[in-house]
Image (tube, rainbow, N blue to C red; front, side):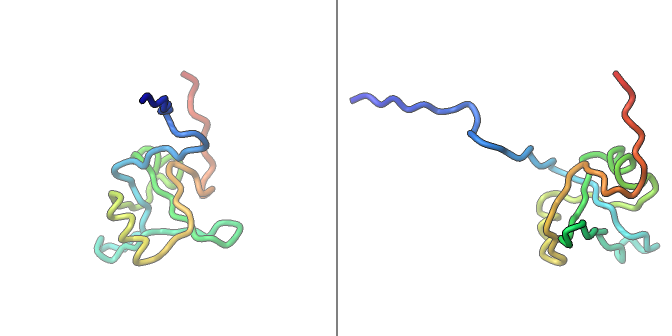
Length: 106
């Protein structure tokens, strides 16, 4: 008996990029870091969004340069979701808090 099964190199259809192992998450600015809360935003359609960044320079560029932050792994993001559910998770996206300068040409 022979079988002719084809295994594609990648799955068909749209896929999401892989999640970074660690992300920088904007927080409030209380003096005691234990009292800080993760900042979430309401988007135009009323859903709650969490904006996270794969590198600190991206948080500074896309969010706010002087914002406080914490680093979370996927398990930490799950704990944050369990404590305060969000509808959307954006990675390396601007929530529109500041005007973004274009990246220099390379």
